[in-house]
Amino acid sequence: MVRSGLYRVIVADDEPEFRGWLRSLLENSEDFQVVGEASSGTEAVQLIPSVSPDLVIADMYMPEPDGLEVAKYVQDLFPNTKAILVSAHEERVYQRLAKEAGALTFIPKVTFSLDALRQALREAA
Image (tube, one colour):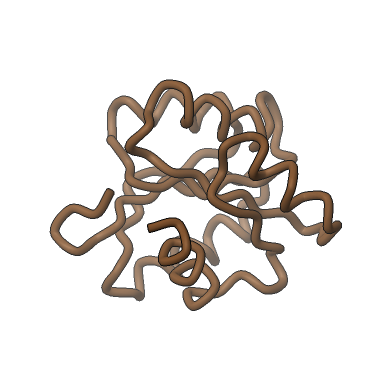
């Protein structure tokens, strides 16, 4: 999953402000390289084969298909790529839904940080 010490990441979210914030957060870290951005699930799944990410961070409820479907797609067709789902909502059921879809975890946007991301990746290792 890790190449040259970096996680290659696709950021997929229909909110440009969050996508930009997340790109900036990741690119200011030595651990992550953003290799693609998508504003929909369709864009995300089209990017995966061409950029070979290690990780897709996807909004749970972005348009067509949503993050849950993207996580299922990743798990089924790209087993070396992992998915983490995010949402502006913090309902407890989201953690279970994310796991059932094949994602590593769910992280609410309001608590998303490099530490939370690193912890999720460590726990999955």
